[in-house]
Amino acid sequence: MEDFWRLYKAIRAPSTLTKGSNYHLFKHGITPEWEDIQNEEGGKWLFAFSRTDTRVDAAWIETLLAVIGEQLTDENEQEEICGIVIAPRKGDTKLALWTRHAADDTVTKNIGTTWRKILNLKEIEKLQYQEHDEALQRQTSFRNPPKYIV
Image (cartoon, rainbow, N blue to C red; front, side):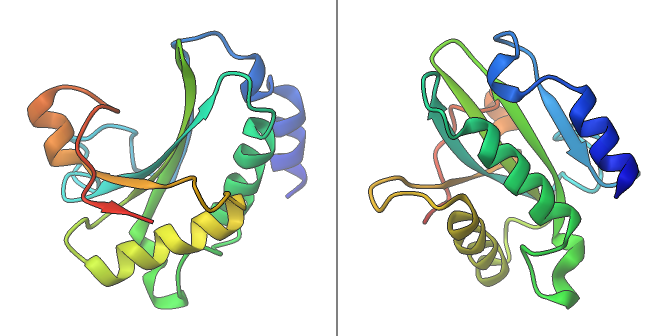
């Protein structure tokens, strides 16, 4: 944990990143690409914060800690989590939680529901789940129809 905090304190807060840049944290051996064999059947839970939303940095660290602390799934489902991405863009900052299998409705929805609680989202705010296969076909990361909404 010391190494983690040392690294975390040395990098810029997500709210200060340049538009178009990304931070990724993925499990060892998994790349943040749709085509990675460990991602190709999966998708991502996605939430878009407005560029003025002050919760971005807290949401990033809470998600980092939840992933590292394996708080998003049951013990026997830990392999479902592949990684996380934060992506500041022109109009918003997208926070995404990548999972391994989009077809497993129960596990995928449970992950989304758990993450929603960790993010402490308002009732009107929704998480969307998008499949990587759809993103690959459309060649866009964030403008795909959701498979699930929680």
